[in-house]
Length: 200
Image 1 (spheres, rainbow, N blue to C red):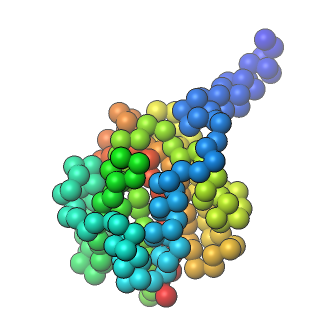
Image 2: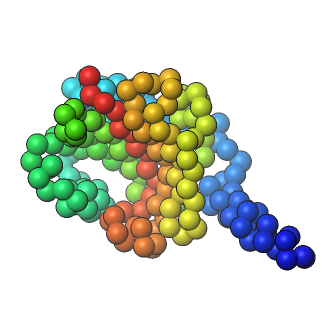
Image 3: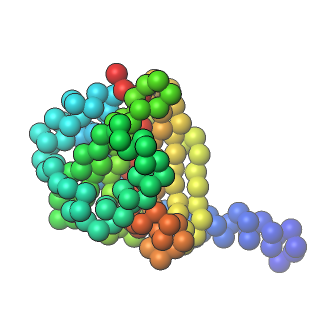
């Protein structure tokens, strides 16, 4: 292989092949976890109280932060970033079985720059592959703004200010690989779906 060909393989083809292997390049038609994230939380995220009610009506059960060790760890990491912000923020935690797998969800209401931002974070701590479906992309009606892939660390699709949802700030779908430095830093591994929206 020529030097130019070798560089193309190293920097473009090999990462793509790794991404396909780790995320099952054959995209799933749908993912029930992504559907739950969209329908139970993200669609109404602008209204904190309505989203709380919707989660309960969809079968999510309110739990404490200690319901799972990794949920506790990632929240400790987040709260340690800004202890003062914690004092004026609201957090609620939920658990639900989806296709026999236990999911955990965090709903947040956080003040920032004179307004409140609501957040929805769904975790599958047992997952070893990212959601490869088109559920979120089709809902938002546009491709990701950014994609991130670091083998053995993290992979992510991210949408910033999607045009179809003016109050939605960000939406992320990704995976934190078990045993990597990112997992060690933030306290969890597995699949995650996340959204933030300006509160109504």
